[in-house]
Amino acid sequence: MKRIKLALAALAITALIVSAQDYNRVGLSYNNTHFGATWSNHVSDDNMSLNGIGIDYIHGFSLSESTPLYFETGAKLNFGFKDESVKVGGEKLSAKLNIYTINVPANLAYKFSITDDFSITPYLGLNFKLHLSGTLKATYKNGGTKVEEKANIFSKDEIDPTWKRFQMGWHIGVGFQYNPVYFGVSWGTDFLKPVEDYRSSDLSIALGYCF
Image (cartoon, rainbow, N blue to C red; front, side, top):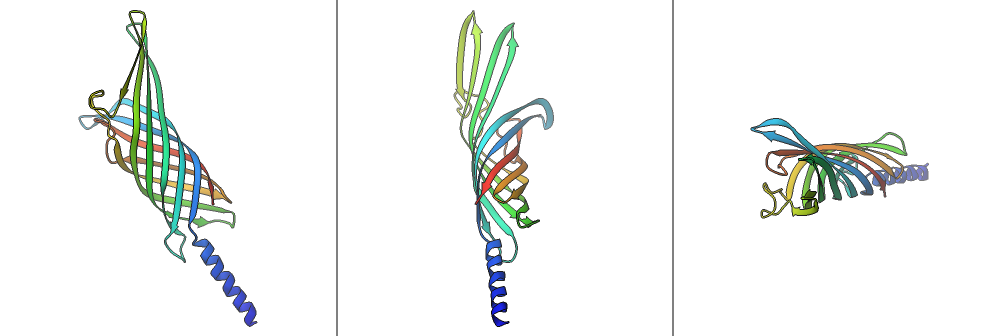
């Protein structure tokens, strides 16, 4: 009986340690950044969205040995892009915007273990965003001659108003994990405007692998 009790105690301790282990997650994500124009503190119809593809890494730090509460952080490298064409004076004008960004989250997450193989993890946190580069490329015809112009959206000498390289915001999300496979959705807005008279929000859909 004593050996059985010791064995059960060892199993309980092992289960506690395992449930409180840190975790890692890598994956890919689809990201949509929406820019909404505001004029004189009123929302305008002048909106646009950037599609993006992200490469994600998250590490979850256990905050309690008895509660599945975690602090999550890591990095996401996002490639955002938008193509648009309009006609000006009967001529076609094409514009392409590319923005490369690193996002660093700081989340508080709670993991609900539904079964031994499946869990649901809602989270809430802050997001720190650093724009590495951003280019705006325009193509049009001038007197029958094709012209291409490129500008750095973060350069005061090339774009007015200039975009900000750093943003900070908040987000809320939920992750579903079945064995090592992860699927997550999150949405949030930025506290700091990316450019004058525009506010931004982010939607992310991620597929990952946990280990």
